[in-house]
Structure formats: structure tokens, C-alpha cells
Amino acid sequence: MHWFHYRRTLTAKHCFSSTGIGQDASKIQVRVKSTQFNDGGGVIQVDDIKLRGEHDIAPLHLTREANAEHVRLASASPVEGGTNYIFGRGSQSKIGGAASKSLKPATIKVSDINSRDVLGVGRGILSSKGNGMACSGDSGGPQFKLVDGKRYQVGVTSGVYYSNSDNVCVGPMLAATVPTSLDWIRGVAGL
Image 1 (cartoon, rainbow, N blue to C red):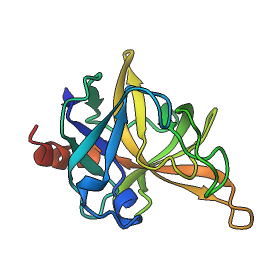
Image 2 (image 1 turned 90 degrees about the horizontal axis):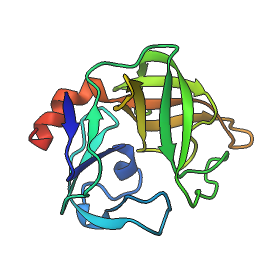
Image 3 (image 1 turned 90 degrees about the vertical axis):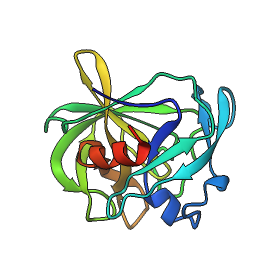
């Protein structure tokens, strides 16, 4: 079993390259143990960012322990046709829309485990809408599968298809695949 420890978290690489932050960890903080956007829990400074070559995955190292539940990293991809779970604070429906003030969960249906992430090179998981869908601002959030009642992170939200005419998120969504990057993640994280 692979655990991602208290002082580490995963997000999407493009969140840094597209915002101009690059690998400047001093500009990044992580809110933990809260479902609210800017309230509750605690805020921890990031002191290191690793960007994975052509894949849309970036492990972050925190300056102190988050004192939160460990996350199991999946060593196998989810099953096509299965249900996965995502979490995010992005827009409810429009690209560039207002972010949600609270964390939103959603179920999604796995369509293709041999797709590409939003960067177009790294392996990705393509999923369609279940009771919700990722949208603008959800990038970097986790995608989980349940195995015997235990949650395993299989992906990192990478992007979503949207209608060019009205900027509405229509799906499907893409996630960078954690199992494909697992050896690299363990190596850079010292696990």
C-alpha cells in the first residue's frame, strides 16, 4: 500500500505553469481540514514544488504536518464504467465563473483509462458526468476510487471540455493518472 504522508499533497502541474507561479513555493499555501474556501481549518506554507515532465501532476511539500488523514495512492487505474469521486471549489458551470465558497463532492463515471491529461502527453482518465462534473477552478483536486470501503487517489483533476459558444462546462473531464506517476511521485517525495 502506498501512502502520501502528512507533509505532502498532490495537485496539477498546469496550475503553476499557467499562472506564472512556476516553482516559487513561497507563493503557495494550502488550507487543510476545512470545506470552506477561505475559512476554518489551518493554512500551511508550501516549501517545495516538483513538476512532472510531460504529466499534469505536481507534488507539494508542506512546511509542517497537516495532521490530517493519510491518502492512499492507487497502484492500479480505476475500472472503465466504474464510479469515481472528485472534490473541488470551482465554478458551478462556466469557465471563468465564480468559485464555490465550499468544497463540493461529485460522482463521475470512468469512460477511458488510456486517455491523456490536459497537457496532451501524460496518461489520463476520461470521465463523464455522474451527479456532478469538474469545471473551471477545480484543477488540481483529487479523484478517488473506493476499494473495499477505502479511498484511493487515482487521479488529479486536469481539465474539462466546455462549449466554446457560451463557456459552459459540458464534460467529459480529464484527470492525470496517479498510478502512471506513482514511482516518480515516490521518488521525488522520498517514500
